[in-house]
Amino acid sequence: MTRPPTLSPSETSEKLRGSGFRHASGSLTAAFRTPDFATGARLVADVAEIAETMNHHPDVTLGWGSVTFSLTSHDAGGVTARDLELARLITRAAAALGIEPDPAGGEPEDD
Image (cartoon, rainbow, N blue to C red; front, side, top):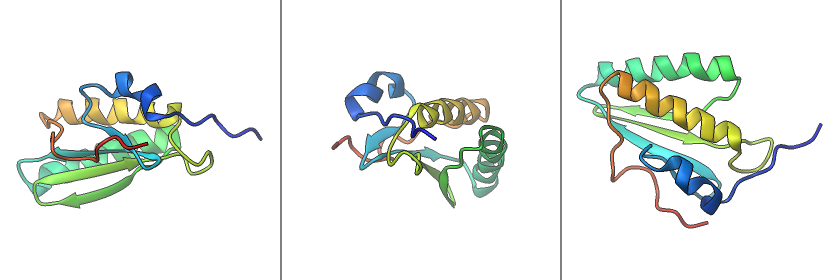
């Protein structure tokens, strides 16, 4: 089985623009501000359904007022097109709940 090709930050920056996701240290990371814990949990539940459909699962940190997602393709050893697609779908799911990315969240590009 062939490993999917990994992408560099320069290859992902345009597609990530406006999503809140940052490409750093071999993963895509974004934080989303939520008005309360229940709304964050709803976002996590919506993303869980998307991830199951894609068979591609993010690392998630849920806290009061925020949800952070980290995406990487472990089988490829970095960020792939699957991660970009999942980032797009997470951003859309958040927007459907009225949740905006936290501009201070995620990590700066460094790769």
